[in-house]
Image (cartoon, rainbow, N blue to C red; front, side, top):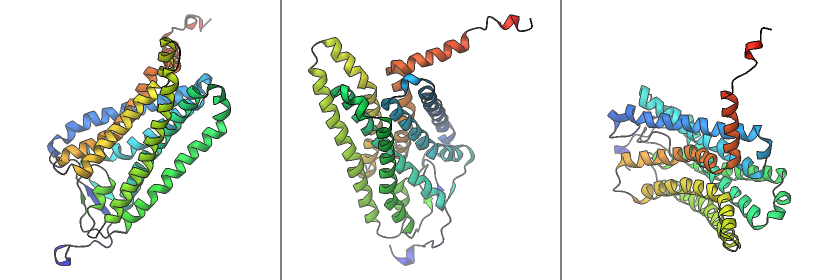
Length: 324
């Protein structure tokens, strides 16, 4: 870009988030499902963590990983929704330069972290089904904690270069056509060659997400081999049911994310408002569906939820004698 046609902002203090260009008049209406989704995500994930904490029988590796997933989901949706709703409701579009890059970091870091947790959960299912006698000795509490720490460190470190690269570029524009500070949406505003950011972003996608999908696939191939080798149909269905919830959650996480990535990279003819809506959906859908999927498919969680509701509805037969 020529210097005569652009203005570089050397001391840029803030960006302007435009929301969903082309759908400005519908912002208030779009905020209704967004807000509803956020409330459902909060209630669902806090409920999962509460039940796992209270129910001693759920103090197992699978449910520890489920709590990690719930925390990650809460951070993901909270990273984008409050600011998005402030744009829709109050037209509060300005976001501080540092806040924008902090939001960017949290979004990509915790998305990567969620991918890593799915790998850990796949490994847990692999050991439980393929080597059941070694499950308790292989996945001890200490090992689970180390896996969780490793996933967090991997995501935190590998996303840092993206942040440092994006912060160093000189910016010629301040208006971001998005509801949050998505990495490529911000980098596109720079008035310099940012191919290194684009290449590193692709590296992260293929190195992190690609490897995670590969390990999950290998785990499930081994799991399916064991399931199909079981002697009876009932045994096969029962064993498959123990990992069905995890498999559904994986599909709900990777498919919208992959579709959004492909649309962003190759869907040049796709309408901008559609891409932005999709970019929100792939961060909002997993936090909503994960608690529902695991709540519906996991009998222990269902039983604990029923106990809570029964205790609340059960009348206190001694209440009439409180004054005696």
